[in-house]
Image (cartoon, rainbow, N blue to C red):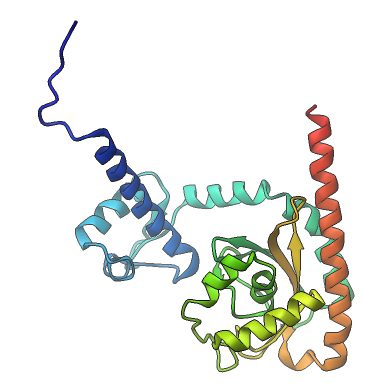
Amino acid sequence: MSTHSTAGRKPAASSDNAGTEAAARVADVLLLFTGGPRYLGVSAISRELGLAKAVVHRILQSLVSREMLATDPGVAGYRLGPAAVALGASALRRFDARTVATPVLRRLRDETSETTTLSGLVGDERVYLDQFESPREIKMTVDIGRRFPLHAGSSGKVILAFLPEERQAAVLGRELPALTEKTITAADDLRTVLAETAREGVAVSLGERQPGAGSVAAPLFGPDGEIHGSISVCGPEYRFTPEVVGRYRVLVRDAAEEIRHSWAWLRDSGDSAGR
């Protein structure tokens, strides 16, 4: 029987915990770049995450070496690099809902002459995954890949309205920051709006997330019956009159249902092909 000295070694559990914590820090740093300014510096990241500047600097250098982040001459700070862009593009290609939503959203754009969007649920936030821009000279466009809170805007509210009760309560239990003067920040008021949204299957926003912007959104359910995201029609608020909003409610709701059926069919066809 052989013996091995354990002197100087950390318990396996401690080593695993340290590795998990390090990985979480790297992920947190990367995630900051999806919802904030294009360029971020060591000091800003350190303040946001509560990490020492030396730790942040090491993480950034590691990410730069793997092309997940990059720097530009004459510009202070770091930005997402080509490897991160490639990773995001790969994820988008594999998002089935985006595939089946494309023709529906393009047709909805043509029917309304307004920009149409697809949002996905990511944690307790949402991210714009795709858009089809309005042909009009004055129009609204969105930032693909940028994260937004669920309580502000129609695309977020309609997702929040259909989240499981525990997850919805967790979101409403946190601070609800005002993105504009019209953002609903009182949890009780928002609960009332969400209950109405759940009954009607559609949400409306007039300047709640972005000043001067109007939107109508419907929930996007996956083949598993769970809420996965939302679709919307959006444009300048002055064009979203009560009559127009009433028309868009029907169009967006029908479009979301069409995407859901197509998504389910695509999944079922894929499962059958693999059997």
